[in-house]
Length: 62
Length: 136
Image 1: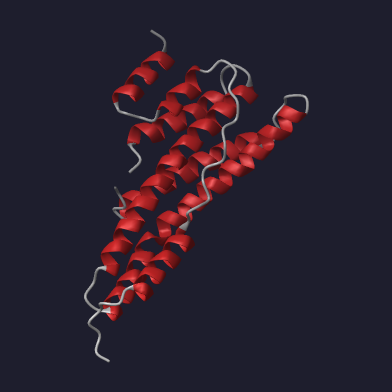
Image 2: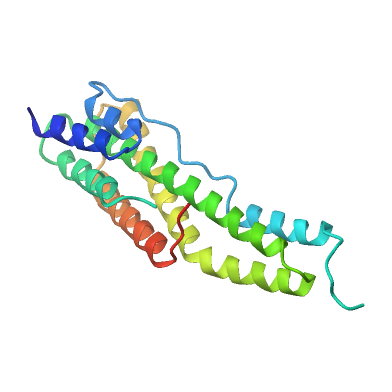
Protein backbone atom coordinates (compact mmCIF):
# COMPACT_ATOMS: atom_id res chain seq x y z
CA UNK A 1 0.00 0.00 0.00
CA UNK A 2 1.40 3.35 -1.01
CA UNK A 3 1.80 6.36 1.26
CA UNK A 4 -1.08 8.13 -0.43
CA UNK A 5 -3.34 5.11 0.02
CA UNK A 6 -2.50 5.06 3.71
CA UNK A 7 -3.30 8.76 3.94
CA UNK A 8 -6.60 8.23 2.14
CA UNK A 9 -7.50 5.36 4.48
CA UNK A 10 -6.75 7.36 7.61
CA UNK A 11 -8.52 10.41 6.22
CA UNK A 12 -11.65 8.39 5.55
CA UNK A 13 -11.41 6.84 9.02
CA UNK A 14 -11.24 10.26 10.61
CA UNK A 15 -14.25 11.49 8.69
CA UNK A 16 -12.34 14.03 6.69
CA UNK A 17 -14.36 15.46 3.84
CA UNK A 18 -14.31 13.23 0.75
CA UNK A 19 -13.04 16.14 -1.32
CA UNK A 20 -9.69 15.88 0.43
CA UNK A 21 -9.37 12.20 -0.41
CA UNK A 22 -10.48 12.89 -3.97
CA UNK A 23 -7.82 15.55 -4.32
CA UNK A 24 -5.15 12.91 -3.79
CA UNK A 25 -6.63 10.21 -5.95
CA UNK A 26 -7.79 12.22 -8.95
CA UNK A 27 -5.49 11.64 -11.89
CA UNK A 28 -6.03 14.93 -13.66
CA UNK A 29 -7.47 17.30 -11.09
CA UNK A 30 -9.57 20.30 -11.96
CA UNK A 31 -9.45 23.42 -9.85
CA UNK A 32 -12.46 23.58 -7.56
CA UNK A 33 -14.58 26.62 -6.80
CA UNK A 34 -13.34 29.27 -4.41
CA UNK A 35 -14.16 28.98 -0.71
CA UNK A 36 -17.40 30.83 0.07
CA UNK A 37 -17.36 34.56 0.75
CA UNK A 38 -20.91 34.73 2.09
CA UNK A 39 -22.30 34.80 4.60
CA UNK A 40 -19.39 36.60 6.15
CA UNK A 41 -18.72 38.21 9.50
CA UNK A 42 -20.43 41.48 8.50
CA UNK A 43 -23.58 39.80 7.22
CA UNK A 44 -24.01 37.71 10.35
CA UNK A 45 -23.45 40.75 12.57
CA UNK A 46 -26.00 42.78 10.61
CA UNK A 47 -28.52 39.95 10.88
CA UNK A 48 -28.00 39.76 14.64
CA UNK A 49 -28.54 43.51 15.05
CA UNK A 50 -31.68 43.29 12.93
CA UNK A 51 -32.98 40.45 15.07
CA UNK A 52 -32.38 42.47 18.24
CA UNK A 53 -34.14 45.48 16.70
CA UNK A 54 -37.11 43.39 15.60
CA UNK A 55 -37.67 41.71 18.95
CA UNK A 56 -40.41 43.44 20.94
CA UNK A 57 -40.55 41.64 24.26
CA UNK A 58 -37.39 43.01 25.86
CA UNK A 59 -37.79 44.30 29.41
CA UNK A 60 -35.69 47.46 29.17
CA UNK A 61 -37.03 50.33 31.27
CA UNK A 62 -38.70 53.05 29.25
CA UNK B 1 -13.02 22.68 14.35
CA UNK B 2 -10.35 21.68 11.91
CA UNK B 3 -8.58 18.49 12.88
CA UNK B 4 -4.85 18.10 13.11
CA UNK B 5 -5.19 15.46 10.44
CA UNK B 6 -6.71 17.89 7.97
CA UNK B 7 -3.90 20.34 8.56
CA UNK B 8 -1.34 17.58 8.19
CA UNK B 9 -2.92 16.57 4.89
CA UNK B 10 -2.71 20.14 3.62
CA UNK B 11 0.91 20.47 4.67
CA UNK B 12 1.75 17.14 3.07
CA UNK B 13 -0.03 18.13 -0.12
CA UNK B 14 1.97 21.32 -0.23
CA UNK B 15 5.16 19.36 0.39
CA UNK B 16 4.36 16.92 -2.40
CA UNK B 17 4.15 19.78 -4.85
CA UNK B 18 7.87 20.11 -4.92
CA UNK B 19 8.88 16.47 -5.19
CA UNK B 20 6.60 14.44 -7.42
CA UNK B 21 4.56 14.51 -10.59
CA UNK B 22 3.65 17.54 -12.59
CA UNK B 23 4.01 20.71 -10.56
CA UNK B 24 0.79 22.17 -11.95
CA UNK B 25 -1.32 19.09 -11.13
CA UNK B 26 0.07 19.01 -7.63
CA UNK B 27 -0.56 22.71 -7.16
CA UNK B 28 -4.18 22.11 -8.17
CA UNK B 29 -4.40 19.23 -5.69
CA UNK B 30 -2.97 21.40 -2.91
CA UNK B 31 -5.37 24.23 -3.75
CA UNK B 32 -8.29 21.81 -3.76
CA UNK B 33 -7.32 20.40 -0.37
CA UNK B 34 -6.90 23.87 1.10
CA UNK B 35 -10.23 24.87 -0.44
CA UNK B 36 -12.00 21.91 1.14
CA UNK B 37 -10.51 22.77 4.53
CA UNK B 38 -11.57 26.41 4.07
CA UNK B 39 -15.11 25.30 3.18
CA UNK B 40 -15.23 23.30 6.40
CA UNK B 41 -13.85 26.21 8.43
CA UNK B 42 -16.43 28.57 6.93
CA UNK B 43 -19.29 26.22 7.83
CA UNK B 44 -17.98 25.91 11.39
CA UNK B 45 -17.56 29.67 11.73
CA UNK B 46 -21.02 30.45 10.35
CA UNK B 47 -22.70 27.91 12.62
CA UNK B 48 -20.87 28.93 15.75
CA UNK B 49 -21.30 32.65 15.12
CA UNK B 50 -25.02 32.30 14.38
CA UNK B 51 -25.51 30.17 17.47
CA UNK B 52 -23.74 32.73 19.65
CA UNK B 53 -25.75 35.62 18.19
CA UNK B 54 -29.00 33.70 18.72
CA UNK B 55 -28.14 33.38 22.39
CA UNK B 56 -27.62 37.14 22.50
CA UNK B 57 -31.00 37.88 20.94
CA UNK B 58 -32.62 35.73 23.61
CA UNK B 59 -31.33 37.93 26.46
CA UNK B 60 -33.92 39.60 28.70
CA UNK B 61 -33.17 43.21 27.84
CA UNK B 62 -32.22 44.94 24.59
CA UNK B 63 -29.19 46.51 26.25
CA UNK B 64 -27.93 43.10 27.32
CA UNK B 65 -28.54 41.74 23.86
CA UNK B 66 -26.59 44.54 22.16
CA UNK B 67 -23.71 44.20 24.59
CA UNK B 68 -23.67 40.46 23.99
CA UNK B 69 -23.60 40.99 20.21
CA UNK B 70 -20.53 43.21 20.60
CA UNK B 71 -18.77 40.58 22.71
CA UNK B 72 -19.56 37.80 20.26
CA UNK B 73 -18.33 39.85 17.31
CA UNK B 74 -15.06 40.65 19.08
CA UNK B 75 -14.56 37.02 20.13
CA UNK B 76 -15.06 35.66 16.63
CA UNK B 77 -13.24 38.46 14.77
CA UNK B 78 -9.76 36.85 14.77
CA UNK B 79 -11.04 33.57 13.34
CA UNK B 80 -12.99 35.41 10.66
CA UNK B 81 -9.91 37.47 9.77
CA UNK B 82 -7.85 34.30 9.37
CA UNK B 83 -10.59 32.76 7.24
CA UNK B 84 -10.49 35.78 4.95
CA UNK B 85 -6.71 35.36 4.80
CA UNK B 86 -7.03 31.73 3.73
CA UNK B 87 -9.64 32.62 1.11
CA UNK B 88 -7.46 35.42 -0.26
CA UNK B 89 -4.48 33.07 -0.40
CA UNK B 90 -6.56 30.51 -2.24
CA UNK B 91 -7.71 33.13 -4.77
CA UNK B 92 -4.13 34.24 -5.38
CA UNK B 93 -2.96 30.66 -5.89
CA UNK B 94 -5.94 29.94 -8.15
CA UNK B 95 -5.01 32.97 -10.25
CA UNK B 96 -1.50 31.62 -10.76
CA UNK B 97 -2.85 28.16 -11.58
CA UNK B 98 -5.36 29.53 -14.07
CA UNK B 99 -2.64 31.59 -15.73
CA UNK B 100 -0.53 28.44 -16.07
CA UNK B 101 -3.49 26.49 -17.47
CA UNK B 102 -4.09 29.23 -20.03
CA UNK B 103 -0.41 29.35 -20.93
CA UNK B 104 2.18 26.63 -21.37
CA UNK B 105 1.29 24.78 -18.17
CA UNK B 106 4.23 26.14 -16.21
CA UNK B 107 3.65 27.66 -12.80
CA UNK B 108 5.13 31.10 -12.32
CA UNK B 109 8.01 31.51 -9.90
CA UNK B 110 5.64 32.84 -7.25
CA UNK B 111 3.59 29.65 -7.17
CA UNK B 112 5.71 27.89 -4.56
CA UNK B 113 5.68 30.91 -2.28
CA UNK B 114 1.90 31.20 -2.59
CA UNK B 115 1.55 27.53 -1.67
CA UNK B 116 3.71 27.97 1.40
CA UNK B 117 1.83 31.11 2.37
CA UNK B 118 -1.51 29.34 1.99
CA UNK B 119 -0.33 26.49 4.22
CA UNK B 120 0.71 29.03 6.88
CA UNK B 121 -2.66 30.76 6.64
CA UNK B 122 -4.49 27.47 7.13
CA UNK B 123 -2.43 26.72 10.24
CA UNK B 124 -3.17 30.22 11.60
CA UNK B 125 -6.87 29.67 10.98
CA UNK B 126 -6.79 26.41 12.90
CA UNK B 127 -4.97 28.05 15.80
CA UNK B 128 -7.50 30.91 15.86
CA UNK B 129 -10.41 28.50 15.92
CA UNK B 130 -8.85 26.57 18.78
CA UNK B 131 -7.87 29.70 20.72
CA UNK B 132 -11.33 31.23 20.46
CA UNK B 133 -12.93 27.85 21.15
CA UNK B 134 -15.08 28.37 18.08
CA UNK B 135 -16.52 24.96 17.46
CA UNK B 136 -19.90 23.60 16.37
